[in-house]
Image (tube, rainbow, N blue to C red):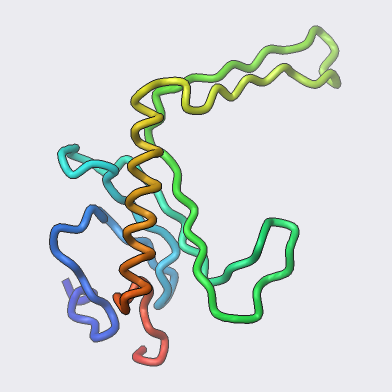
Length: 134
């Protein structure tokens, strides 16, 4: 694959990452396994090249990285109930996140994987493509 020969991309073996989504030269998402023993990726990441303290805050002035992780195949199920015949009435929504032990384990593994990934970045491993080499 020509992409794998790019000088600004490092591929590490034994990684749990399954696929990387690119937008030009920037990684914008990836798929990973929460457990090396499963066949297909069960985690999705959005990779954002900025940071901020919270959703309402301004973007930080320094370079940053935000990783948003989510379960691709949750087994927990929520419920949506109509309040009545009036279409303007707000429905009753019970999202029921993390209701099953499987979902709880996947999110715990996702947090561990994300922390390991960010610790690698602190040690100098490259997580994103370097635009200076493009």
